[in-house]
Amino acid sequence: MNKKEIEKLQKQIQQVKKHLAEIEDLRPGSLSTQYNVCGNPTCRCKRTDNPLKHGPYYQLSYTRKGRHTTEFVKAEDVQEVQLQLQNYQLLKNLIDEWVDLSLTIARLRRGK
Image (cartoon, rainbow, N blue to C red; front, top):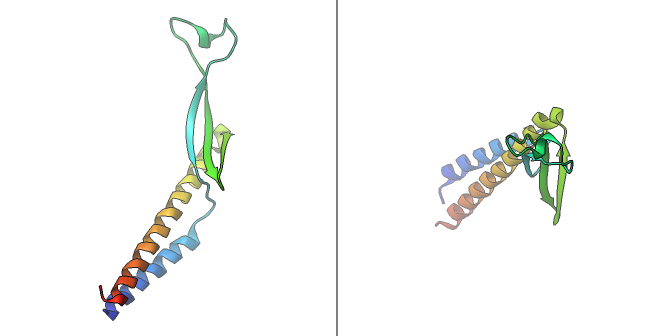
């Protein structure tokens, strides 16, 4: 067992925990931009030469506790939602890093 190496890894875990505590609002899922065609046969979106679809509309999709959800997001809220999505990805990455560090410590303690 390499005590100094384990201590170094434990300090890295403490840094991960510190970063986790700093994460603000988060949200799972993905944000997409949608353009739609309406049912009005004389609308600009139905033109044959240069159709102009309606939009953009922003749609958030995610699965949580086994339930898939789709929500529309207002244009003025897109930036905030993107930040929440980034925070969620950061959370997952930091947890993965913590698990990897912990597994390395466990291997070192076993002498492998």
